[in-house]
Each structure stands twice: as C-alpha cells, then as structure tokens.
Length: 548
Image (cartoon, rainbow, N blue to C red):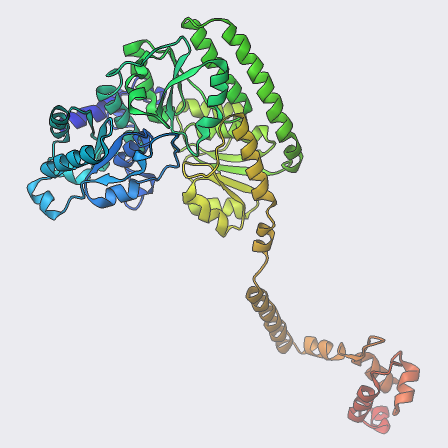
C-alpha cells in the first residue's frame, strides 16, 4: 500500500491542475476533495471512478477482484456505446468469499485470468483492485505481472481501491495505469500528419459518432479516443498522435500533461457541446495539426465545414428560440458540462438561473463567469430541499441534471432532462445541439406537466370539505353571521329573491297572503309559492306585528 499512497500523493501534486497549483504545500498534501461523509457514497468511490474511465475500451476484459457487489454496482453505469466488440459489457469478477478473505484471493485471481483467456482470448485484461483484497494485502501487481509472463498477454493492474478517495481520484489512477502499462507499448500500422487523440471522451450515447464524420471529412484521424469506443491497440499506440484534445480535464489532465512531456503531443482543453464551442474545438484541432506539420489548407477547409454546419444548426434551432423566450433553466451537473452546456443553453435562448460547480475546476468557473456574468450563481452544493424550493417557487422552468436529481424535479411537478452519463440521447456537436433543443422543447411543452400540477380528485374534494367546515364553524361562532346566512337563503330562484326581502315586506306591510307578498316583492316566479306560504305560516299574526 505504500506505493499506492505515493501514487495518490503524486496525483494530488498534479502541476497541470491550476487549483492544485494555487495551494500551499501543506494544503496540497490534504488532497483535492473533501472527505466523504457517511451516507454520501452516491457520488462514487475511487474504484468506481477507475472502472467508468476505462470500461469503454471495448475489446478488453474488465476483471474486478473483490466481492460480487463491487462489479454489480459498477457494471454498465455509464451509457457508453461501441461500434465493435461487446466484450466490455460482460461482467467479470473473482467473487471473493469469506474463505478468500481469510486465506487470500491471489490464487482465485490467477485462476480467473486463465479462465478469461481460455474462453474469450481478449487482447488484454484489466484487473481492478477493490477495498477487501487491498485491506487483506492481495498483491495484484505481482499477480498481473506473473500472469502476463505466463499467458503472453497484457494483464494490467488498476490499483484503485474505493477507500483511497473519490471517483475523481479513481479517474486519475486509471489514467496513471494507462501511462504505466499501456500507452507506448505498441506501434500503429501507419501514421499521418492528421492524427489526434481525444482524451476524457467516453462516447456517451454514441455522441462521438456525431463529431467523427466532420473530422473524417477534414481528413483528421482519431488515432485514439481515451476511452470511448476505444480498442486496446489504439490506446497502446496513442503516443504517435500529432495533437490531442482534452475533453474532461477533471478526470484526465494527468494523462494529457504526461503525454505532452513524454511524447511531445501538444493538447488543448475543448468541448463539442454547443455550436460555438464545437466550432472553436475544430479550429483548435486544425491549428495544432498545422503547427505540427499538416498542410495549411486544413485551416481553410475547416472554416468551410464550420460555416456550413453552423448555418444548418442555426436554421434548425431558430423556430425554438421564440418558444424558449422567458424560460429559465437550472443546471445541476459538474466538470466540463458546468460551462459547456451553459453555452449551449444560452444559444438556444434559455436563461440560466444557476449552474452546479461541485466538480468544476477554477478554469471552469472562470468560463462560467464569462458566459453568465460576474454575478453568475454558481452552486457548490445544493441540497434536494433547496432544489425543490427553487423549482417550486418558479425560479426555474426546467432542470437539467443527472439521474440522482430527477425525483426532486418530479416531486416539484417540473420538467426534467437527463444530461449526465445515463442519458439516452447524444448532445455533442452540431447535430447534438439540435437534438438537445428538441428534447428541451418536448419536456417544456409536454401536456403531462399541466395535468400533474392539478390537484388530484381526492385532493380537490378534501380541500372543498375543509373550506365547507371552516365556513360552518365561522357561522356557528358568530350569531350575526348565522342570521345573515339565514336571510340570504333564496326563496324565489328564478327572480333571485332571498328570505330577508320576503320577511321585510311581510313585517313592514302586515302581509298575510301569497298574492300580497308578490305584489310587494319581485317573487313572481312559479317556484316560490310553497316557500312563501311556509314563511307566512311561521310569521307572527298581524296584531302582534303591530304591537311589536
């Protein structure tokens, strides 16, 4: 564990992280994130972070060394997509038992590696360390090294037990494993001046495939995507790329920086969310490639593609902007999406009332201020109660977030759209921007929300009964109110003549017949004769009236 502790400390000292660089030496040793609190495991552990960062490598067998629940909780929890092998979606685990915990699980791990090679023959096996084997001292580094020599295949240890820290730390530990054991170990079949790496892109819902056709049209080849829709050989030969784009700096900044130091691959941080960010990212890729020796005509061809795609996207979005006028959105996400999706929503005509920055870097926050102004509401940590209040008070018309927050929006009877890793639609690139606008419009205009906000029939009945009871109680407590209510009772419905009018006429003129009452009041309809007779019968005699 001493080597793991040293590795974790080196990640905390990451010079590519501006937030880390601004800390003192003492603060840097404490790490980048707050300690997890009991009950807050929903944010993910280091093992979970490593697994979701590497599992999109499609032709690799991902073997979890630990109890079966670790694999069960982490399997398929990110909606990445593959254009080739589906081996990555097969769950492999050593399923450690109490006996393995007592006597050690190294032999069980070696047996599992052999079984995978015999049945599936993958190009490589990634072995993930979890809390239990780490605490009992299983040396997965030694087992993987011995298995590699014995079977003649790369068996890569991913040493990221959950207890060492947060999911973000696990992302970086996974990146360190790639740097130590994978990147630079193989050579590509050929290279071109247009080879690029995409780092921190996971092809969620197949969104990479919405950008790849544009790069193909420009002649730009994605040599390796780390790790969305990637193959082991592509990642192993990614050190021959001419440039790199860092999509999620929070997760993979260490990979981009060290590849630049070791192999001289320049990188920039960009985003394909939103029209303007997509265009800027294409320009940056072209500029870096030209600086590294690609023909200069790439710049002109890139501008032509950008002009065409922007025109198409704006034409498709135009009709929606009027529908979105005055609509407000609350964005609860993190990392690069905290600013990249802000730009996309603003381009669609929505007003942002706040964005979450819980997982954002200092650069992310600066970008948010540039987009939303210096008074932008950046939410470090919003509780479900606060989210509910903001939505219920109509400060936002729709919430865009991950699956953990959807029930807050549903309870508030407000539209909600999933934009995190579990989403079903691809929102990257120009086509993705149009799709995002369409989905927001569907959510906002869905008639279900208006129906959901209406009181249920039993709620309406309950409210009516409460109001009736309160009225009866008020009448019973006040004699004047009781008398006013009695006199307001209708006698002639067709002429709306009340009891008070009838009684006043009877007492004032000493009336004793229905015809006389009708002569002095407007109660001349066919509905009131019997009621007037009842009133006359209950009235005192004329003599008594005169005496009174």
